[in-house]
Length: 267
Image 1 (cartoon, rainbow, N blue to C red):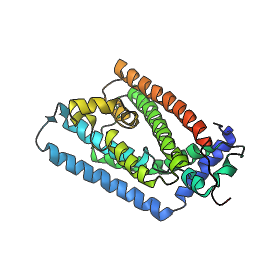
Image 2 (image 1 turned 30 degrees about the vertical axis):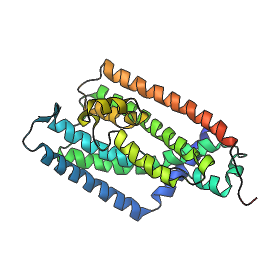
Image 3 (image 1 turned 30 degrees about the horizontal axis):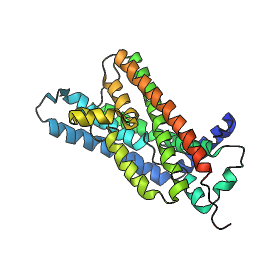
């Protein structure tokens, strides 16, 4: 598994971001839809709690804040841009990528990360709307904000690596759009982006907490809504680091196996 030099990687990320930002109407629609989603999620969760101060031990403000942050994360920090790897495997042009100075894995991860950066302003606007509505409380302190940022970046890294693993199955099946749809739905549910793990049955919540998906969304959002960083916060971030290392190692292993499966169509 080869990784490109920093200048090359930066160029790939910038190009991927530009390829998303060039569609201005799509950007505008995305911003408006996310802002509306924030407002609607706020209204729905307010109605769900009605006059109750807490449900299942979770306070009304925490539940609403989590639901809105989950909506923002699901749109922005769980990238469904799977790079061009799949199509290049399908049409055989991947053979040229294998001899380029910049590794194919660098290209794939760079394209995904660039797409995330392009959507970051949309997330900031969604967050601004949420704060203006009073639906999401500001961080309780600098330490909490810093822990949240670190956890969010690690969650993003986990999401990118999971996407990479899904994309590399193209070396075995060529057509993987069905698998992507299944993965998309499973990740959205298992990560806690749609329903917080707090509200799930005990055994199910325990099982999902053992998967990398919860480290993508549930962990950083739980840290954000926490009062002050403590040993549990450090343990959660440590768990994310373990997932990053494990998924990076698994990606390397799958990549080595994938190279043995390269088939060039059409000569």
